[in-house]
Image 1 (spheres, rainbow, N blue to C red):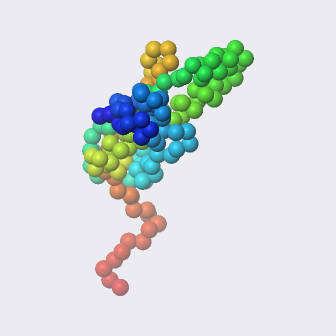
Image 2: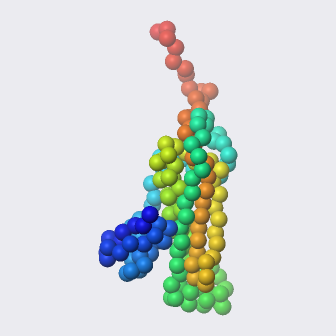
Image 3: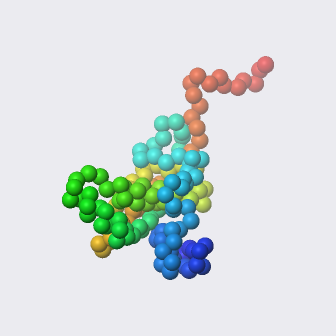
Length: 157
């Protein structure tokens, strides 16, 4: 399913976060943008300590591919020579992780899940300057466990 660029109306395949036509970033992937997953629990563990899993909905995935530009490659090469961290590539990784998790969360919500368990991340390079970030997990429907400290409601006044 392609997405439409708001700047040039060009179409780009889902998973690519830069418009193939004008190289504009996909909406919601700009640095600093946050993805709304706060109403959906995401865990790397197979269970949730605070919730009961009532129903397993199914596997969900999030994929994204980011390209590194020549300037970022040049600055990273300088960092490689002088030593230190490459903040340019770290920002691409952070954005890619957020995008992949957000897409997985959207998929879980569309299937009727309210949490994801067993999330895993995978990174791969494609060619010389493309980075593929994938995550997967199991969408579940979970309800909060009743705390031992919470009083139970009784039918007598």
